[in-house]
Amino acid sequence: MLYQPPIPSKYTEMRERDLIAAIADRKQRLGRRLVILGHHYQHDDVIQFADFTGDSLKLAKIAAAQTEAEFVIFCGVHFMAETADMLTSDDVHVILPDLAAGCSMADMAEIDQVEDAWERLTDATDAKIVPITYVNSAANIKAFCGGRDGACCTSSNAPQVLEWALRTGEKVLFLPDQHLGRNTAYMMGYPLDSMVVYDPHQENGGLTDAEVADARFILWRGHCSVHQLFTPEQCDQIRAADPAYQILVHPEVPWEVVQKADLAGSTEFIVKTVAEAPAGTKWAVGTEVNLVNRLTKQYADTKVVRSLAGVQCLCTTMYRIDMPHLLHVLDNLVDGRIVNQIHVDPETTALAILALNRMLANVSARPVAIK
Ligand code: SF4
Image (cartoon, rainbow, N blue to C red; front, side):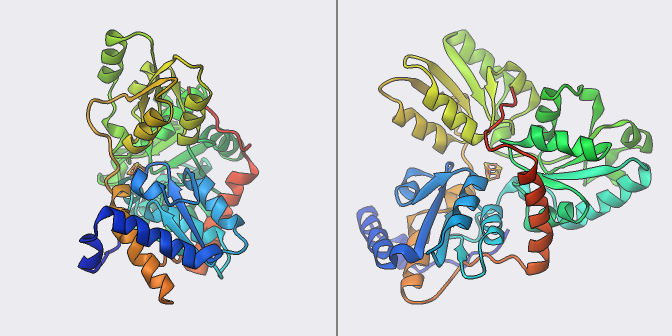
């Protein structure tokens, strides 16, 4: 995680209505030179200023499609801003309002650990291993995969990318989210005993040579600290209280929760499923609470939408992006200074783009359900 120096107290002490007015003013002054992107998990204070909302890859593609913008403010987390920087031209400056907005899942796969794991796994087997990284990973992990005939995937297209990987190789190393890897491979028909977990904190990843040789999928021991909070018991409780609820979860939740759910799919799949559901339906949704709350409000007149969990499943790093930090970067832009720019070096970008392009060449645009 990067260090974010404290912003001047004049921002943190401003009243809400003054912040809203000031941000709107700076946006207007910067006009078409500026685009603000808001991830679905951002809170409404920030989303109200977003020119576009979406999941991470959708927003990165929107950033790449901008022809007039000089500045893209990415209201999301660090790996998302990196991806946007890699997909945009050198004339576009990508800015993250709070540099400490990292992602606990992305941080669970560090490049030294992944390089050690690769050495260990390729020593243990002669079979071709294809490294696949979820886009929720640092640019250097994407570059690692790009440089070893691997690819990226999103939660929308993970099944299509894994099908491609198993056409080009014999085994998959899946980074950094074990749950997305397990849920996707299981949905594709692979049994749980074809998967092993590589733990970077154990000697040899905690795996014997025989376990590596027998496995089809080697899942990195990483997880999302938000989606990990959903449990099978929550599904049982909701169904016992009201059987009319349909349970819709993100594939970053544990496998046991997906087995109890009616449907599982990416953030975009969740948004689309609720949008297209008939009036009168009830939904218990297992994903980040800001998105669930927004869906609850949006469909309050026609459908019931609630969180699957009784506890607040909030992404605390996403939550770091707030109006004071947004205004701080905007004020600097108005004064001709760029602060909090996210820039990925050209060598890393070139390899990471290979991984992103292999993904894009092998998938359709439509989100694929995991269940
Ligand atoms: S919700 Fe999970 S995967 Fe997404 S940014 Fe937060 S910690 Fe990372």
